Image (cartoon, protein in one colour):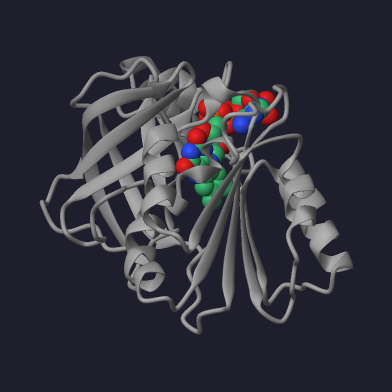
Length: 276
Ligand SMILES: Cc1cc2nc3c(=O)[nH]c(=O)nc-3n(C[C@H](O)[C@H](O)[C@H](O)COP(=O)(O)OP(=O)(O)OC[C@H]3O[C@@H](n4cnc5c(N)ncnc54)[C@H](O)[C@@H]3O)c2cc1C
């Protein structure tokens, strides 16, 4: 898919948990946003004269990619984080530039017997557009899917009703939610206590028939990948996308020089020309 760069404007935000918001940016040129479910874009924001870049997955759900100009993002707040401080205070109308799509966390073209999608926290974002893509494959029986979602507590179980309804209406889709800091309830069979790795170990993992996608916390991804390698998996059937912390990529130079700065530069140039 061709990588494009374009400007976009924040249309609105929506709170989905105490620490997580949905952000909808819209392309200024009104062209469709093209991507494959699971991919991300790199966004450049300007805050107080500084330009910085962060990556965010496209978290659209219920719509086919390319059907509109929207960039739907799901972002969790990081205390003191530059993008977090900027975005969580932002009003509709702020601008950014976007570049993408990037990433290979995708539903493979050659379908496996079973697709295992593992996420922690906001790492659920790239799987949301996949749910629309997977519907016909689940309905016609070409694929079985396991979604293993790790969060700290029930309060952080994002899209709880939507995911439970999706699981209820697709018998080939199985949902497990693993709470690292909360007991499971006896009422909900999809709930587990502990880490996502424990849930995976309960499944009959099969390197010949399973394809695994891992997204979110880098520590979870490293631990799960090591566990899967010990079971006979490798880089061809385990695709990893770590939500690693961003680093600052660019500083915008001052837009206008003051008279004093201009005078200083002129003096330095004069001196440079005089001193060979
Ligand atoms: C391919 C890719 C896709 C991504 N997609 C998403 C997405 O869909 N949604 C999303 O919310 N994020 C996503 N991220 C992470 C995102 O790009 C930013 O890193 C994140 O929003 C934090 O940025 P910040 O500027 O607020 O914090 P920064 O200014 O980058 O970090 C500030 C401080 O907080 C620490 N820190 C940063 N992040 C965390 C964290 N998660 N937990 C604990 N400490 C942290 C850093 O070490 C640093 O000390 C993605 C990252 C990658 C590489």
